[in-house]
Length: 388
Image 1 (cartoon, rainbow, N blue to C red):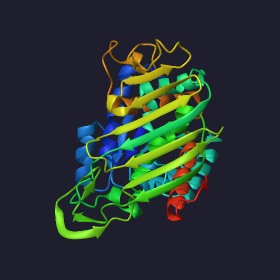
Image 2 (cartoon, rainbow, N blue to C red; image 1 turned 90 degrees about the vertical axis):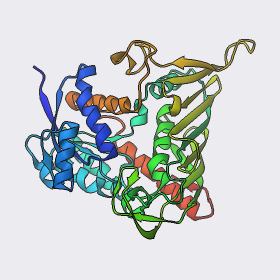
Image 3 (cartoon, helix red, strand yellow; image 1 turned 120 degrees about the vertical axis):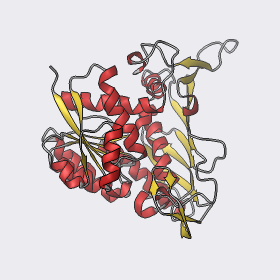
Image 4 (spheres, rainbow, N blue to C red; image 1 turned 30 degrees about the vertical axis):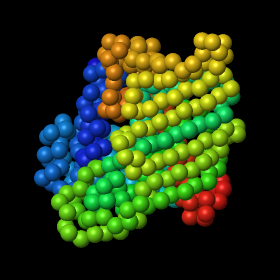
């Protein structure tokens, strides 16, 4: 019999639901060295947390995260709360000897992320592991893109273009949810979705950003207040308005290690774009392109072929030999958003069982946080070039 490892999760809104789906499904599709047990779900409201635990498949409910991280039946703590509480919960859990998986961005500030990375380093010396949950690394097509670059199929990387385009707050009457408040979210589109494309670009290319020049903009500076805020939704509006103190869009250029040029755009005002995380990489031998709104496809161009037959070709990333895909359905039967979280839970559990450091680490999360801070600093200083 495989050993059972107990999981305690803090937060049960949008991210809590998809993480719950991952914990429920991972053992059914992947042959893991351990079996996760959904021991306890943490939340603030006793009634709502108990109902969420029942609906999502957790054995118990807890309204104090400090009690949750001390429970004997919890060996893993999954942090699915807004960014303002990531550092406190994760650091306490690591100190208690619990492995930690934490939603992105790692924190709201560089100082918080540094403290979390230091706590993770100290915990690793005791055999306790930590990972930040950048789920788009686990899209099979993105993992295949990384493989192509690592194998040298693109040659020398010269250009990277990354975008994350959404439109869910384009309506100026959309309420002032927590993601639009600096005290809860740290930043706006930059931290919420810009963090994803920074991590994706660095993951696919294997190179970090070393400097940026940036613009940010807030298009709607006041929004209706709501009596509740959960995930991407707000409750009923109160009739009053509050100030939006985060960015609605961020646009920046950068340079990667080795000299490659990069451009990034993160906005929640791209009308008609729902969840368009896109990346294109151009190298001396070829190019690749990906768009999450067609998540099972990777486009690849081999520039070493004769021009008469060269061009982008579509790869359907659903074959058994593709990353993660072989555990699921027959070839041609695509995966969805929720599968990326199952993949990250699978990788995390395997690392914990093997006693190895999972990726992306808290150090990787800190590296992204430093990029976000450099973008904000550049935008506040007339787009001055800013070293990461």
